[in-house]
Image (tube, rainbow, N blue to C red; front, side, top):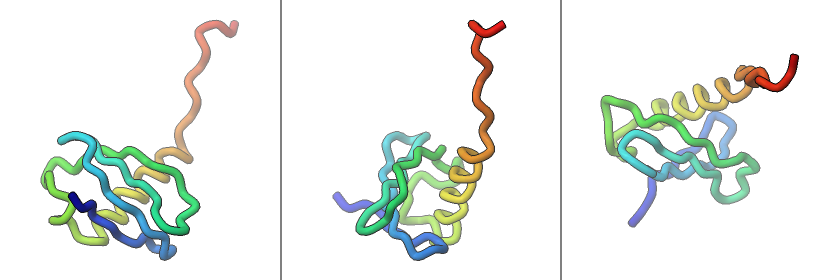
Length: 79
């Protein structure tokens, strides 16, 4: 089985692996220094091959931006 590959805006290659119907993994391939990112699958399309490169780049950008902006949860053990 093949997986969908695409290049991000910086030229790094990613592979889309559909883990389930609701979640996809974007895995770096080749010389890409990135880390695997899990993203929610778009509700309007179940097949990664049917999405445009721009849509895949948007999924990657949204996931990367969310990770940067995410605040750590407060510990329930700290006063």
